[in-house]
Image (cartoon, rainbow, N blue to C red):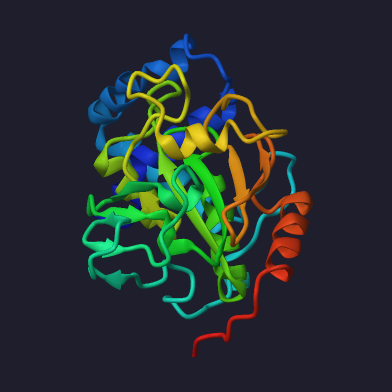
Length: 281
């Protein structure tokens, strides 16, 4: 079975929801009834499956376009960088420090309640990841979902991670089911990860709103309560920019693409204020 057929559930969901729009309404039957879409997919015959695969091929082969119709980026424009430069910095092995996360010490210890004092469960390995591991790097954080009309923003997030990774930017994606249960199951998330060739760190499904049935994760409680930038998250793919010291610099909702000029300008300014770090070969 070809890769396109494997990606079919993700592609069909993206195409259908993109056509309808991703409305910030948790009672929307289109948003909530993703199971019926999957059931329809299971009943598709060979002929309809081939037609959908052809449609998926057209989507993959053509340029992906932004919500306003502007071109995002072609595969040839994505720069190859050192795979290690965009990830977390190694932490010091346990030496008896007070700030322990997953068997490592945050050294020096992060101030309690600060961004770098938090941790979250990585996806798909379910490893405990300390935000202290990203201290010194500029972070673009998004609450993500595999089955949303805004899911194509994955491509732009990956581009930003690769484009600016050597300069000190790291993208972090936090999956959530808070909006129409659109986070996706493990197979659907894997399909989208493969489809968009994601290399940035993803995290297991969490609550990002104060009304979440999963409870609001401390990272997103912190992100949504910073003075001057406070406020709830209306939908999937909201973006937050945190500087190398753990200060929230800005936030944008789902209608602003990750490669929007205002986000690029904010990232560029944050990287310029970051202490010089020699690039890795």
